[in-house]
Image (tube, rainbow, N blue to C red; front, side, top):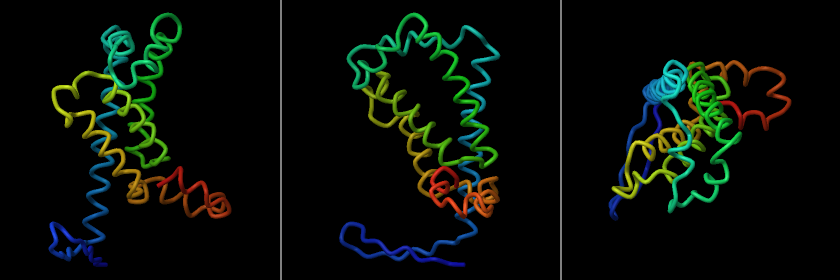
Length: 173
C-alpha cells in the first residue's frame, strides 16, 4: 500500500511516496532501539549501585525546571527518585520492546527526558543534544503509534475491552 505525502518546502511543492511496509519496519526499529536504550540504562543503574545519584541532578540551580527539581532534593524524596528513575527506565524499555502500552511508555520516557533536557546544563552548550534527540524519538513513537506494528498493542486493540472503550487506544499503540 503506497501513500503520498504532499508538502511545500521553501515555496516549492513536493510529493513523496511512502511505503506502509517500510514505515512499519522503521517504526519497529525505532521502538526497539529506544526501548533497548532505556532498558539498558535502567539495568545499569541496578548493576552498578551507587553510580546513579539523584543529587547531582536535583540540586541544579538556574535551569528552567530547577524549582521543581529542587523540591525533590534531599531526604526521602531524593531516595525515592533514585528508586523511581531506574525502575521507570526499565519499565519504559520493556514497554517499548514488547510494544505494550507503547504510547504510555513513550509518554513517560518523553516526560523523563523533558526534565533531563531542561534540568541539565548541557543545553547551554547547544540546544541539540542527546536528551533532545531522545525526546524527539519518544514523540515520534507516540505520534505514529509504533506499538501497532509487531507489538502486543496491536493484539490488545482487537479485544472487546478496547473496542468497547475507545479511549484506551490512547494508552496503547
